[in-house]
Image 1: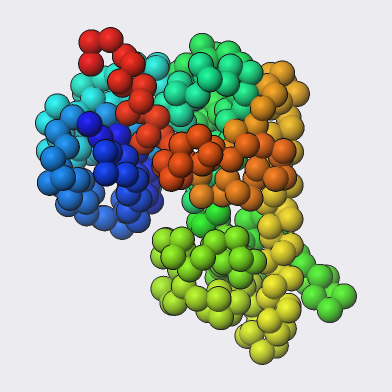
Image 2: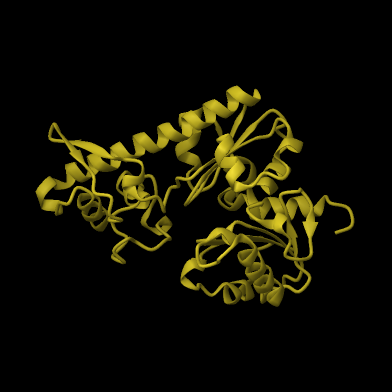
Length: 311
């Protein structure tokens, strides 16, 4: 039995052997079928699947993306079933499959933490999901979640620095940032020590190295400078300022959802869980799920399937 989460940039898989996270950018024609087949060879035959990769812009519509992902998975796992935003499993490419991965996590957690709020801070986005009324979550699209504050489009790795940080103080001088894609959140979190080089799993903006020095150089470019112009401390100030803004946006989002829904305990997952847990007074779900917390939707859909009659 295998749980699969097909995102736009990452493929996450949980099975009896553990957790696997593959960088798999669908927008660059990543070998989704070949990566899935690696796990078929492990002896898995029953697959339960969630997705969010249908949104990537190589597809003309979400439905085209859903169909592509379903076809790819079924080529490797013919009996695969897919969890939808209606809280049900489906055999085919129905519209409800679009971006249902967050709901699978909520479905898994709701019985254990009925008054909680689930925060999945991943490579690309932050999901903020109240567990206080599961039925109210059914049918929510990403558009509706953005409108409700349940989805914040910023992540640990793939957020362009100037989308959040518009200016920074360098040696006491207010300095605007260029809006070019010179640097991303992974660079900031790497130099701040929030992630090791091994967790910088996505491509770099300049296709260069994933090292501390290279990340400092990319951060300097956001103010149209070489690293020797502003020094390492200047580049670090850009990283610190970015994380301050990013952390504030997410914690304010959590506060607003808690206030609106009455949720209490904050449960954090994703590669950014150790960053958000202390800011929000939350519990890092790695204590409950171990390494699966970094791939919670894949873990959760497998667990939900096991307790669903008839599957």
